[in-house]
Length: 182
Image 1 (tube, rainbow, N blue to C red):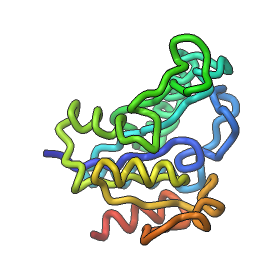
Image 2: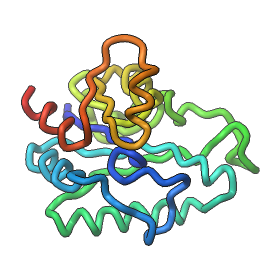
Image 3: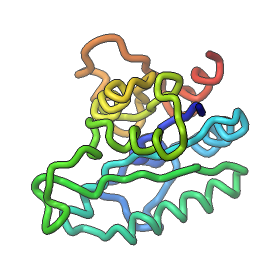
């Protein structure tokens, strides 16, 4: 079985911008490209798991999400880095149409992590979930992963509300350095 590092997208890889979907608005959190490159070089799978309720709310489409993910991978390639797989949840209970439903993929539920584990033969107990929200941490814990909260995005505010022992790092690069030292 393989080890993976699951990454939240908004606020972890890229600067938090409400309902980001336009390529022109994308901006890496400083050090994110290097962090992902280090994970690639270490042979760990890098899998993004991101809630995208903007789809359910009608702010943008799934095609917009996928276009942004292709852009991110093109930008990462310029730094000899890549994301191995992208999983996103387009649902929200108060959304529109077929997206307005409860699901098992929306974090804090572990559905995206479990789906990735099945598809890529991942050992969840040897893997990590890194994110800037309590929902990311809860999803990782529910899937049986090690978890790290980063202080970028919503992380500083979320840190105050966390209950129990959670590893905390300043940003994605600091989290990756800690993961690779284990």
